[in-house]
Picture (cartoon, rainbow, N blue to C red):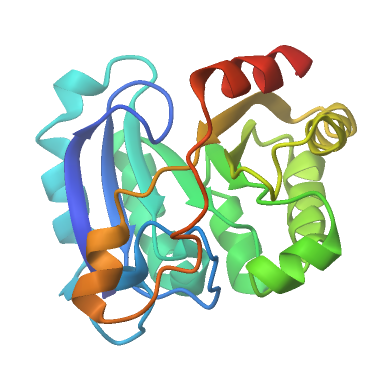
Length: 231
């Protein structure tokens, strides 16, 4: 059984095409820019079987087209790798494209088995140095790059994603470092820069916990265009 936080039936932002997006419950990280603090705690959420999730996803199969399918997001999907493997195995039987949206913070035998059935990965590269990772995320860049190396060795199509946060990672130096990571891994076929937003403030307020980046401004459209141009 998978611990599920929520489901988006017809998502268009979490992988190619139209996606059935399953947000799983539980995450070991504490990213200061996290938009979903309500997904952190383990043992919460609804319990759903792989069979039930595939049955629901199959209802929307006609909308998936050639590129769409199912995406596992989070929380952190890798924390439920064994259950996710069962889900992706059923997706293969149904001819449904599979995608993982992940931080890449875990690489164990269960995760490697899951990657056997993964068609695409959306990998969040939150920063481009270990110091920022340790301070603002709770893991290391080294562990994420080990995960990316595994994807590269398997030739799994990968999209790198980074949330651009003013004063933290909105420098040309960071974008150039991100581009080097892209260029060093031929499996990467795209990079998406996502503008930091503070719509999540209400979630932090409801949970009665402080939003660490509440005083950080959102990046301007001009700044995002400038950084995208560097890629």
